[in-house]
Length: 446
Ligand code: ADP
Ligand code: ADP
Ligand code: MG
Image (cartoon, rainbow, N blue to C red; front, side):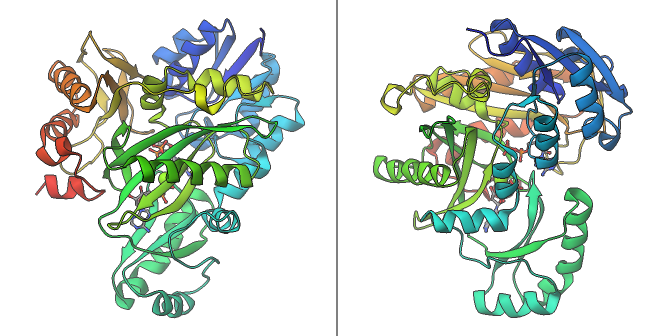
């Protein structure tokens, strides 16, 4: 079977390497694009071809749509894999690919646009009968308007950027005073990060759990789920440890959640691999948060328990193949956990770029998705994630045990990492009991 002869990877780091790995197995040639700051990065070496597209600043390289398109044309790539972050959820980029007859490995531009706006996504899901976090369904233009809406909704609230991502552009609001203070700055932040200052308000869910559902849909209306991922261990509203299955769900709630996620994905005619994110409140009610129309950072935990290759699935679906399985054929085995190793201070979470003078990694019973090798530089220009450590066990305690052993064997010199925090997490009693919410790290660090 042949899908594409050559795929350009519009990304960097661990995800670029991850995509190259699958392409090699499928005998698809790869083109890497890289910035001057990534000249010596392993993914540049590992791709069949590599083209420098500009300086370190993302706007002048990884986010430069025309440059990426130009390289795809010059190297005669038939498809582009966007990875996560960067251009992966940019409808303008997808349209440019379509215009040039290059296949974008992901859903179509319309779907990405719909789900890229959290306000629009909420509307769509409500139409589908998917519960959304109680909140305001329009954009809020002024602080006066915000105050009056907040009054109707009741505090505490979450002020959010409609175009937000990566945990950026949201703020918990407890009273009118805080709203008054935060409104302009949150809008400004959203404008500068996402080029869109549109804000809305949601009820703040206390003691919440973040549980998401991996879906895969083909272009012929067939949709399946690949179970859930528990992502409640977070700092700055961004995930640090993920696992599947979720220790929180009973079979009945799980079935309801998976079915609801599929209903939402079907309603928007979703095609390719995607993630429906939900938040659970203390009473086990769940609400749609947002949909990520791309491969997720934490996709390896799903791969481990299902034995599937999600990058291969993305490629096949983008090549307009039918889903190669029915729901009943997808089985899960055991339990998987992923820890994100960051070059950052384990207490303040402040990035700590530098040269990896030493990087010793575990060798057995562990999957390592790393963007760097010993001697590599973690630059201040991009996300400071060094790599992901993934273990798969026959059950949750086995996966935790393997993770504990793996973390012990990690030794890094040259920069500060969060490895001590990861160790603390997997050794914590509440974590081990599966009793944790998104506020877990806050409590662990006191
Ligand atoms: P996931 O939900 O896959 O775990 P994260 O929220 O951790 O995703 O973000 C994945 C990566 O993409 C990170 O590098 C993050 O900084 C980046 N990212 C996510 N959303 C955006 C966005 N809207 N704009 C720019 N970067 C983003
Ligand atoms: P992003 O696009 O940045 O990933 P999300 O809407 O997915 O934004 O939210 C990221 C995280 O922020 C969630 O996993 C959760 O921990 C927290 N969060 C978001 N909305 C709420 C809310 N209404 N109440 C409580 N926590 C929230
Ligand atoms: Mg999210």
